Amino acid sequence: PLSNLDAALRVQMRMEVTKLQKQLGTTAVYVTHDQVEAMTMADKIVVLNAGRIEQYGSPLELYEHPANIFVAGFIGSPKMNFISVDPVDQHGAATIGVRPEHLRIGKEGEGWPGTVSVAEHLGSDTFLYIDAEKQGMLTARCIGEFNLKAGDRVWLSPDPARLHRFDKDGLTIRT
Image (cartoon, rainbow, N blue to C red; front, side, top):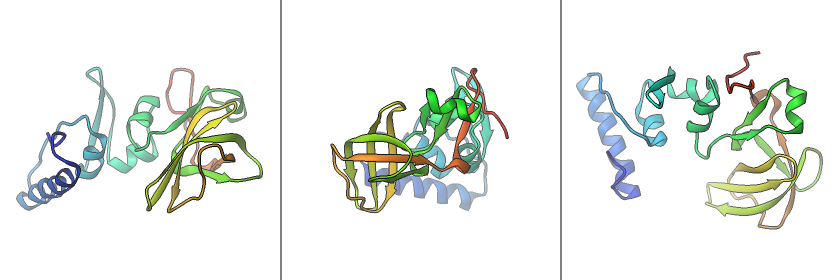
């Protein structure tokens, strides 16, 4: 419902609708394809895929413990990185997922080697789109200004405690 508004008005309207709903003390059902709206306005989210419920829970439950690859890829901005090549074998999964903010980046060292393809410097955050040789294109989020540019060589290390593991059917493997 808010997608036709400019960015600033969209943020303001999300706050106003949320405040109004709380003031009225009533349940509201809000349907949106915009996951930012869902994450910022909801107490509970129902993620649907082709009319089927994939997962139900609080925004943070869905973000931190997605039930499957569909939910993991839908919740979060930028979306989760999925890797289904060599490193996966060591984690006992068909696919591993790592959120952009859970990738450590170094200009040298250990980890997955790659080359910065695009660097988006936003002031409060820097988004790096990295062509990791064996893992494919990965997105990394750095807090604040991170001084890298296209063409720079980097090494990526996922936070092992924050890895998401998925089986061959795309379901989360619980540890």
